[in-house]
Image (tube, rainbow, N blue to C red; front, side):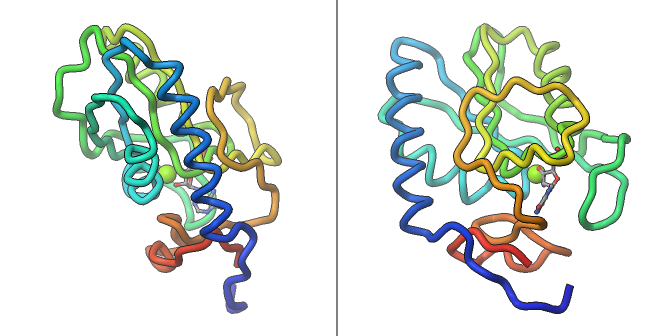
Length: 171
Ligand code: IMP
Ligand code: MG
């Protein structure tokens, strides 16, 4: 991958879509105990912008998982490297992901959060890549459905680089 990044979704389009998602979530979670759980590291920028687009008294926490595999694919083995710290019992959780690709990671996360005795669990992803999906996943909030190869920028990396690009790009 020695070619340079090409913009596929501009930061203006990203902002507009996140404002729409925030408005929808604000309606859906009125009178709920909403907790956004951002999946590190890729979702940190998305979660920061999404949180500010939601007009509710919410909580934010983080989870981090590691998967064994090369730089561009997720292998089947996932382990927890950082657990959320706030009490999730009775809370209404939205998992905030950067990308759902094969669905391996989000399936693992759903099982993890199912054990936390939360009141409800939904999934929000910035990018839904269905081409390589191997697990059946029900995604509640999708920013963009993209099938344009490997995606970087706006928090998403290739070998830890490019997370700071303001637009969603492809390599
Ligand atoms: P999955 O387990 O195959 O669904 O992959 C999920 C994770 O792999 C995402 O949360 C990303 O962190 C990473 N990932 C998958 N596809 C891409 C991509 O195109 N660019 C950057 N990261 C990706
Ligand atoms: Mg991720």
